[in-house]
Length: 330
Image (cartoon, rainbow, N blue to C red; front, top):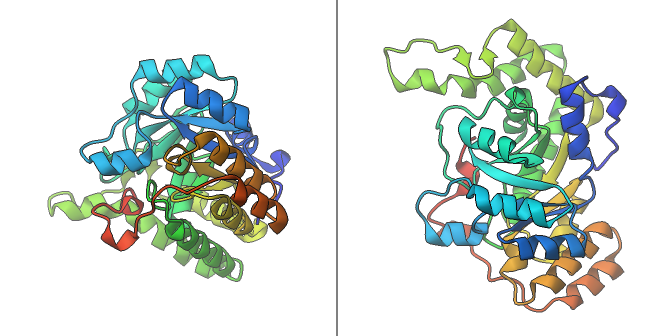
């Protein structure tokens, strides 16, 4: 499913620039880093970008509590250290964290379920920003909502910090199957699909009988124009046989074979964090995962990459998790 997304067919102006930046990451590995030294290691290994945060997801999961945007000093230190793009995470629905990150000069914001959501009803209005956003999705409807809101890249949510790739595989399978369903829908069924996808925007209405039918969102009124714009995204999906934005895999990728597996699933690239810096030898693990990502269709190279690294990070069974991050911000 990793196909070329022709820039000539994308939207004009800022949308073109945002999606163009996301496309520059295609085929690469984006690494979570918590120090300037880790950012340099990632760059030396060949990462296309780094994600600056105070704790890798496995530590966020272990420590519990409220996880927020990283401190500005940490982000500045990483920006000053590396020459590759720097991304950073904001809480779901937290416009001001995203505004701070934009002011700091990050290249992309990840509106991330790894952090504690700030808004239980709505995500950030990403079209209001000049920098691009990446958002997680577990299914096609979730992906379409995020694209409608302005996301320039989608990633599988997976279950970050577990070292268990099964959730990322699950989300990839669901999205691919739903895309196949859209490709055989006629116009009437596409309209029904849009109504189903839009239904999640009405959850605020259900919280109080006094609210009535709330049809205003941070992204505009839920009117005929909104419906038409969302349908246009589904029409692009139907025509392209994939999402109309770059799609990465994230959550639980811990080995070169995991990375190769998700690329074989048609992903355009890989996010990895805990899998590298919770391994006994982060440098070798980074080299190995990047090698496997670049040569995912060559089992001999993936085997060589797998042999390079020692033990992978300890993994967690999803059934025993106290918090399922994939459920946040659906």
